[in-house]
Length: 190
Image (cartoon, rainbow, N blue to C red; front, side, top):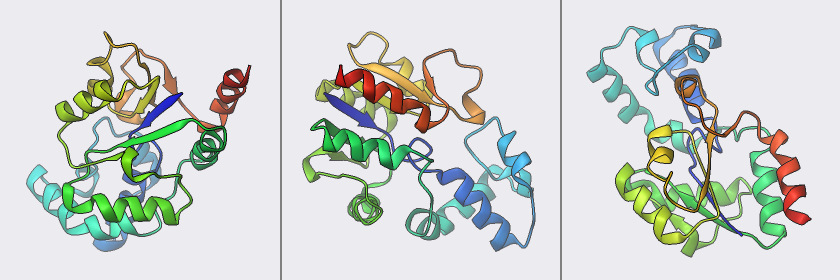
């Protein structure tokens, strides 16, 4: 089978990682309960930043956010390793900017994710991401952004939303915790 995955906030806990970095850089100690209550993807508001200041902070922090010790969500790495062991095709489809593609691929490999060059796509806007997902004829696709998944509703691909504080108002199949998804792998084996 063909599985597609977004990376940030689907497989790796990027926003929370960035939230910790912001706390450190800004000398603040805003708790995770504030982070977990955010209803937007952007994380700058609890730090008292405007949208412009938040955008600037994000851009100036990308190196540290993307390439340090951002953790995978529990069970995500093991799931992909198991899918790879079983011979399934794993595709990564990320909107990370083009200049981050090769380093992101290297980072994933260094952290144990099974990555094949021809199955790694990056540097696109969301509508381009949807087109790639359609062209790949995936069986399953996982993302944290409901806007992307909704555009695939007419396609044969089965979509799953990675549960986040900012997508709670959307009713679609979701992954709350990757370890719970291990039962899904067992169903594929039957």
